[in-house]
Image 1 (tube, rainbow, N blue to C red):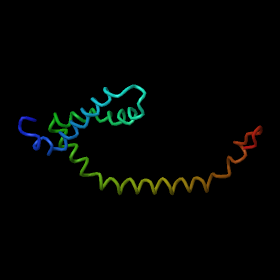
Image 2: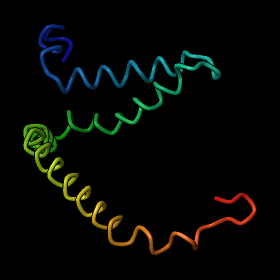
Image 3: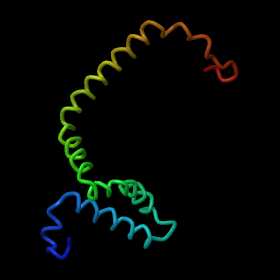
Image 4: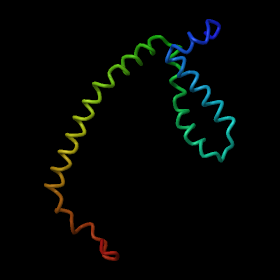
Length: 110
């Protein structure tokens, strides 16, 4: 792929992801064990399984569909959060005082 030129390689987001994962892996090996940046790089190292996206064309199509559905999924997440909030408020209103005296620690008074 690099033989076709660096510009062509840098146009594909999947190849950029591959370059990012490899660069993070090399950086992790170069850092000392007690480096504070190592923790953050290890979090990004979880992207390593995403390298298979470049190898399998069906996986690439699936990943593009999932990314294109993210804005729609945002609306669903907001709806679910509102429903969870409403049911939690109903639970506090209905059952808020039923266990008030059972959780009292007599030593501390809380």
